[in-house]
Length: 374
Image (tube, rainbow, N blue to C red):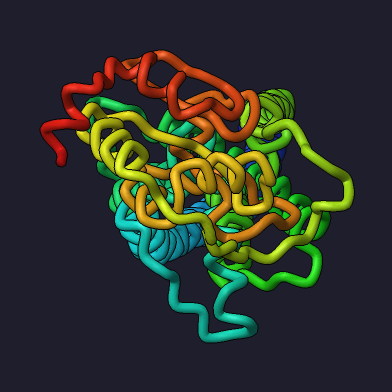
């Protein structure tokens, strides 16, 4: 009995020894799995939060870029609106001056001496190669005003791109600012003591347009076009120099830089021959060009006499006197006179005094006409 129990009890300890290690292994595996799950969960939370931070940073950067782009766009539109406004004011001013120039009317000058504006606006500096300067201003200011309006609305005409429109605006305003600086120099050197409100207003408008166009284009883009701007300035200054050097007449005397206009009375009586000749010369379109200070012109008139000299088609080349910057009348400049007096008879230019008999022969005046006149 004892042996049976010993034999039969021997298997139990062996079976128990196998079961204990199996439970410990499963428990350790479960603990390891739990730890891994916790680590993964923590990793997901960290990665998710880092992604949120990155997304927030990206959104803030994009928002800041949008704000900056909107700000620059608003600045450009504001600058172009200024260009349109300044160009419109300049267009009105130069239109008024063009009207005065074409109608030979006196300018209204509310500040300073009223004659100063007219003297400057009617001087030889008021035209470039024969084209009235105010008319050029009308075109320039008109172009700037239209470009400012179109760029402000981002609608360019004639298929012109926005970039080309900005460059065109910059080039036009640069040329206007360069011309204004040149005219201010002329005003200070040739018209010292004179005041021209319209000239100063036009200069301020031109400089304002130049600054506005630079703001609209941006400093970085302007730096890329410095070479083009310098070329435009050189072309403008060179053109104005060539125009004014060609239009300056030969100076007659250094002492005649300042001389007010005056008239001289003709004292000698006119003969019937002189009266008939004067009528004949006027009928065929003959002209006598002279100057109030010219003694030879006075002697020529004395040959005709008091009555006959009034019948001549006489052109005074210095109706406003002689001053710095004020030169011959346009009609005398176009005639390309070499001296005074100068006769133009049947298209022939004749310089110097002429005897009445010479004028009769040159104009085809005959004694028969004297008889008919009687």
